[in-house]
Structure formats: C-alpha cells, structure tokens
Image (cartoon, rainbow, N blue to C red; front, side, top):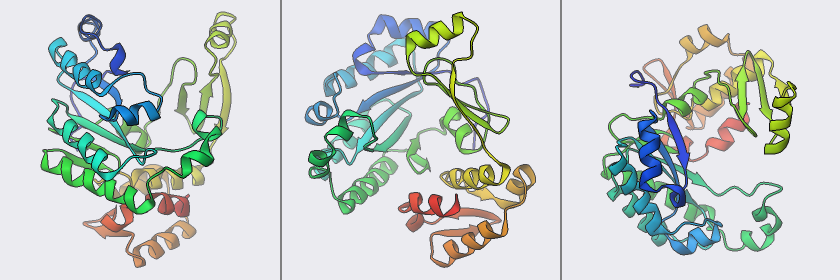
Length: 293
C-alpha cells in the first residue's frame, strides 16, 4: 500500500477537450495526474452513451498528455453497455493495455432516475448484456489487465507501478474530504453534504454570503462504522479488524454475526488477521455491502 509521496493533483478531462496546448498548461500549473473519460474504444458504443468524442480522439488525447509531460494517466472504461458484446469489450481492453497509462477504473452502466437512460429504460433494458455476460466481461478485464502489468487493488480499479488513486483510496478508508463547486460532495466530522447543482444559483449563493449546501446528512456512529467497513472491503489490501475497531469503535453484535454468516457462505475470509472478500465474494459485492449496512 504505497500511498506516500508528492501530493496527487488530478484533473478529470474528456478526450475532445484534451488538445496539446491545454494539457501543457495544466502540467506546467502543477497538475500531475489525469483522469480521462474514455468509456469505450468503440465508436458505436460511444454514440450509444451519448459521448461526443471518437475512439481515435481518445487515443490521441492520451498521446497528447504524454507529450505534455504527464506520466500518471488514468482512463475510465464502461461495461454492460447496451448492445455491447464480449468481443467489443475485449477489443477496448486490448486497446487500453497498449496505451501508456498507469491506471484504469471500470464502471458498469447504472440507470439512474432523472437521466436520459432512465426515460428510455424499457427499451434499454432489452439491449443490455445478461448478468452472465457482464460477469464474463469483468473476468476478462481482470485477466487481460493482469497480463499487461496492471495490479487490481480494488474491485473496480487497476494500477501499474503502484500508482494507486490516492484520492479514491481516501474514500474507501474513511478520510474526510471537502468538495468545492456546484454538485460537489463533502464529508466532515460525521456529516455528509452536497452543494446545489445549478451553476448560476451556486454563484449567487456564494456572492451573497449564503451557504450553497442544499443537502446535509448526519450519520450516527454505528451506521457510519458499518458503511465504512463495507466500503473498505472493496480494497484488495483487506481490513485489519483490530485496527479498524481502535479507530472507529467496536462493531456491534449484529454486524459480527453477519460477518460470521458471510464467512460461512464463502463470501469473506480471514487471513493473517485481516478480513478480505473472497474471489467469489467480489462478484457479489453489492449484496455483501447491503447486508453489512
């Protein structure tokens, strides 16, 4: 778990905005990590996702980043996309592993209320890969990226040369954080909150000296402890329960009983005083998390 070193300063960018002069300015300003919203190297899938860049632009964007001086580059890839096949997914994986990148984050498509996908959900659901196909895509990513020198350190994250995402690792281990700007989330002193999403309303609130926060949720210690345990389990480094309880407080009897049940079912295991998801359990993480939380 090599997370110490110079501050990680990441900027998220989409391929269509990543021209060389702009990237050079970012690099000279002190930004040392890029997270690129590639999503797919299939033009058909990019169109389905409503993306405005092409597969070629995604490749060129990574090349521009390297020329600008970046050596720590992450890309996002999506699976379980409408009409996606295992063959098209494998093609994206092959292209990704050939690029000079250090990190890949995987996301499967989620259809959230209020989105364009949600309004067309009946049509979309008919074109989604099956659960079995989705599992095959995930396992193919694990095998392909491992053979290309990537280490999987979290359920959805792979890195080369120990270049983990320090920012995201903070989420998974309970670090407090502040989010600035419209829609930004923060967590501090047991309180989770977010800012209003509308840019102009956000500006007006700040100018008037009024708080832009429009959502606030105080989390009780027990709920926070269970939630953090579930999230921490996403990491392949495991959870030292003794250390966890010293920092966050003792787990309640119900949680301990659930852990025993999960262990009996082969979903979690204890090794060298640490708690891990089993290979089998990682395929059912959402179920495990819901049982713990």
